[in-house]
Image 1 (tube, helix red, strand yellow):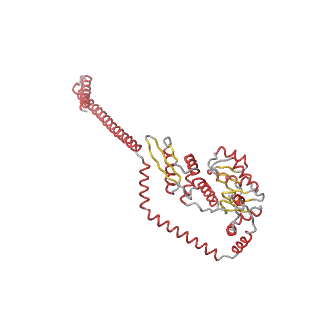
Image 2: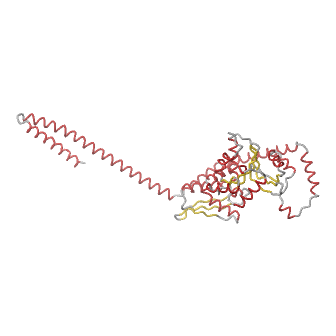
Image 3: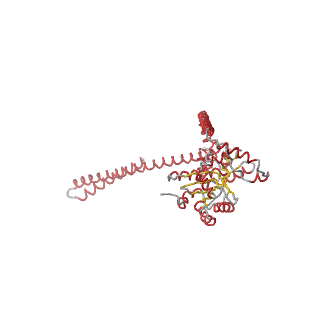
Amino acid sequence: MMESRFFLYVAIAILSLSFTVLGYLSLSSYSNIGAILGFIIGGVLSALLARIIVTLQDSHKLLNSHLAKRNEQLTRIEQVIDQLESLNLQDTLNTYVNELKNTSQQNQKQKQVLEQLSNLYVSLKSWDTQKTSTSQAEKLEVELEENQETINITNNEAETSPQVLSSATKLEAKQYPKLTKWLESRKAELLSFGDNQTVSSSLKKIALFIEKHYDKLSGLMKEIRQSIAGNYEEVKVDLSNKSNQVLSVVNNFGDRLKKEKLLTYEYYREGGSKFAKVTPLRSKKIEFLISDWLKSSVYQKLTKFFNGRQLKHEVIANANIRISNGQSSKVDFIFFVDNQPLFIKCDVTVSESRIGGYADFCRNCNLQPHQIYFVSPDVKNKTSNSLTSKHKIQVVNPSQVIAVLEKQGKFIKE
């Protein structure tokens, strides 16, 4: 810095002296005046030159300072990134989550007790209502018991034939008047049906999560199904080449189902690789991991759509129907919308034989193609049209259901 200022001062002195000599020589008649004018002009220009040079030097100094700070910040960021990559953040987050769970454990227990009391109240209320109902059900039960002795069925026939509804269940089926009337018009009968509310609210959210991210979870879901079909063996998944987005989805999936006690889940590093260990647990709710998640997702989508359109609808789940020719089939959901039945079959895998058999049964029920849906996450968008055209029903994946329904559904009111 001192060296640069020295040369600046020398340049100023030389410039001032040069203009002084130039003024002295230019006005030879008035050499003194010329020298003074030259000195003044040289001084002003020297001052301007000095100001410009000093400003440039200060700017250069400031720029170098900013660059140095930026390089230092970048170096720190790189160090932090290296440190983050070396840490197993999933384990750390799991630790924090477990701590939060422990702190709220008492509140969860209280919530469970309240839910159990609420369920007990509903059950008692329902039982009391049944006690005060007419004696028609009791008469039907007596008649059924009297006729039972006259029925001779072999053990093999009893194992293979669908169980006919009990008298009490027949009365319960009357809560679906549109379905009952429709079955009677086709000389068909409802052999059995299930409950629409068997999936908890937390599992319903997980079902939508799986459906939304199925492209990232399909491989893991398939291995889990194979493990359940076998001996519930541990599934080890290599996540080394997966993106951060896939890692986030898989870890979220594992943590949620671990909380539901449907499987054990552990994410870990081994050398430079990343792995996840998953083991399905023997549980009454294990069917959720096989196919119930898909049914829950489709049911939620359809009911939300109909409610949003303010379309009155009636729905029955897991309906086992036998038609007049003796053919029977299980339909996951039957929706009645504007007095039109809508048959929904859900399957986690695509099988041409199952699609064909289901389509044949529905056609024998005198249903039209726009009333029949086969839903599977394995149906690709580009194969949906070909399968739909071939089997004359709507073969779609869950993300297509609503769009196809809006296009094909003749009952939709604008």
